[in-house]
Amino acid sequence: MPEQANPKSMKREPYTPDPKTLSLLRVSGNPINGLGETKVRRASPFFWHPPDQHPYGDLQVVARQNSRKCPGSTEAFAAAYNHPPLCPVAEDRKIAPAEQLVAETKAFALSHEADAVGIAAMDPLYVFEGYTIEEPWVIVLALAHNYERLRQVPSNETNGVGVCDIGDQYARGTRSSYALANWIRSQGYNAQAFPGPMADALLLIPPAIASGLGELGKHGSLISPQFGAGVRLAGVTTDMPLVETAPIRFGADDFCQNCQACTKACPPAAIQEQKQTVRGVERWYVDFDKCIPYFAEAASCGICIATCPWTKPEARPKLLSRMANKPV
Image 1 (cartoon, rainbow, N blue to C red):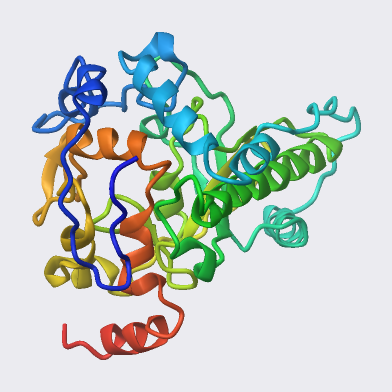
Image 2 (image 1 turned 60 degrees about the vertical axis):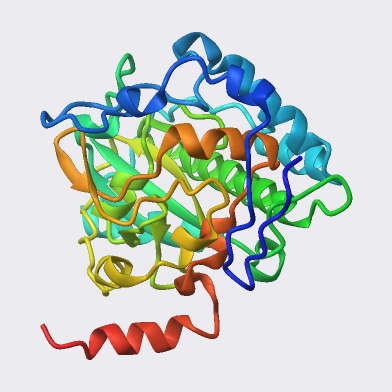
């Protein structure tokens, strides 16, 4: 495994990919992701989709094998794949105002491990190419990391605390999303669960942003006003009548324009200092070809979200106050 970066110092350690790892990156992932494309389109399946949908199956195997070398990681990630079956949709449908159903949905999710809940109307751009989703609503669940554990990334063969926390949050997302989907189905509505870490039909960050859970950070991850970048996502789609929760702006995007913390900390220098055009949208973008080899070798990495100033519990309230008082 590569030398670890130090999230505390935010200094990038020298990193050169193993030639064997680079040989598995047979095709550039940036064109697949739509870098430089000026036309809006749906996202293509990517690294964590089944290997027959992209050219990175062998590299995916390396990433899995390295992460499982970390103590406790096998058990942590196994829980993320362990979920109950979806129950049949009840024949008797609960009829109630959408506002009431929203309140009950949020209450159930928050009492079943979710730390925050957002609701967005389905957009075709939330669905990966080659997939279909019939339900008109997306419920996004946020699962907060344990910062003290997260900050110990990347993991290695003697310290698996960081990657285990990643696995633990994915497992919470699995339990929470399946519990919510089954509860909705018990109310007489269709619902499907979409947890990680493997990808499926549903993108999670775009509806999370649309539903008010946060803003996109320079590191390509969601920044939440509650949890910073230390958050994982899971989704539930449904035909239960709901009401959208509005997007928010609290200053994360503006802050990222000048902050270089994750850019400097990223060992393979994959985080771009300026926004790029990706599938017709100007947005923050992480260079796939630089990120993935390090990710595969370093047992999941996570340095960028651990070093993000918004993720630090002691800094976040100050940042929120600072950005709220920033002149427009």
